[in-house]
Image 1 (cartoon, rainbow, N blue to C red):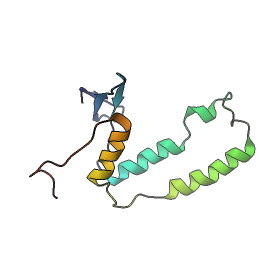
Image 2 (image 1 turned 90 degrees about the vertical axis):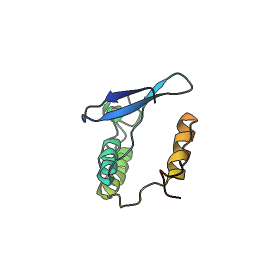
Image 3 (image 1 turned 180 degrees about the horizontal axis):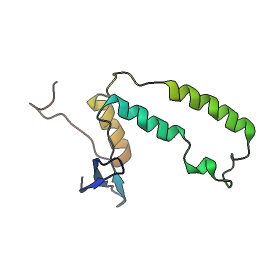
Length: 109
């Protein structure tokens, strides 16, 4: 982590410089409801599907099918299945090349 940056939600998030030199803001959920909030942002489809130049913008069948999946996903609420250290480490390693390891006395074995 090379610096901290404040996001629009008012929280500080760590910023990491990747091996490529690109800076990436790191986000970790701090409570289960954070996952539901982030899921809703993702399900919106972003501005790409609101852009008339996007290939699927005028595909009515695609948009109807997409809405079915969005409705299913939007009604799902994350349960208390918190990712384990190994799962988080594998994700971070795949994204950045870094890995997490437990520290004796700080994490339960």
